[in-house]
Image (tube, rainbow, N blue to C red; front, side):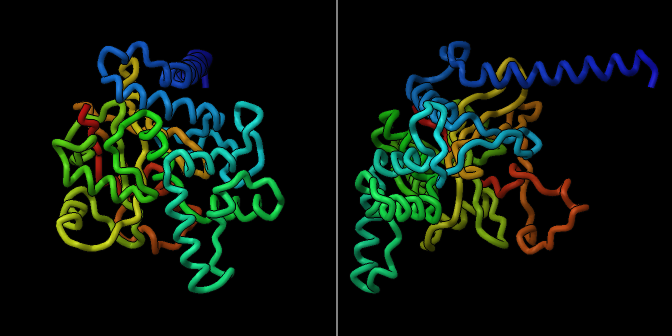
Amino acid sequence: MNRLAMFRVIVLAASALACFRVDAANVCEFSAQQAKVSPAALRIAQIACDEHALWRRPYINAQGRIVRLAAMEGEKEMLGDGQTPAWRRVAHYWKVSGLLDNNVRWEKTRIEQGGQAKRNGASDCAGDAQDWAAKAACRAFLIDVPWSAVFVSHVMKTAEISDFLTSSSHFYYIRDAARRPVDGPYRLVDPTAEKPAVGDLVCYLREKNRVYGYRGLLAYLGGSAGPLDSHCDIVIGVDIDGDSKVYAIGGNVIHGVTMRKLNLNARGLLSLPIKKDGDDVRVFEIGDEKDYNFNRQDWAALLKLNR
């Protein structure tokens, strides 16, 4: 490689690094976006950003690669404030959202029917969990029971989105957005057909061995079947400084509160890597790594904030 070619490589690398630094520094600075979004959207995004900062900013890039890991849900490692163990913050989400009480009642019923072997630790999280046994049981509950929807519910409740249907399953507020597109806080749209905005929720289904997509989800919601496994992230930045990216934050993503970067196409719509039928049963081979990333999902829903 001659000197000119090497100089160009160095300049391009430096430019790419500079862009990442701009993104990391500006994505949660809302002054530039403030005139374009509603106060409700700003509250939602700011709360999600504050939690992401507390978790020391774990990050998945636009290629679906984990760029940064931090503390994980069941650990006693301190978060960014230097005084909150990671597991206690997750317990806080359960409590503030009001969803822990449901699990405590469910655990009590299970114990009445099957004895202490049916205990799952929810009741241990309800108190301060100071002794060793209570701490261990609570931490087991926080690891075993998904909390990504609990995180979203915590953010919405803290942001005072009073009519948001809080739930420990994303499916129920996805369904609520489909049923109440006008008078509810969110409406369900095709994630590849409408532009995302700050305060929206971008969601995928995580059913094994089945890809639904938006049309499949609509058909499913038209029936009376039970809930689907799913996940939603909160959109906190769109096309910042014209970078054609969406930034979203979700809980219980690689076991923490993690930011994800997604691509926009030339029309300003999400350009999403979509999982295919059969992906879940494929035997992973090292040579297949290019086909795998954390952004390749069954993206089936964009919940548009109605405010």
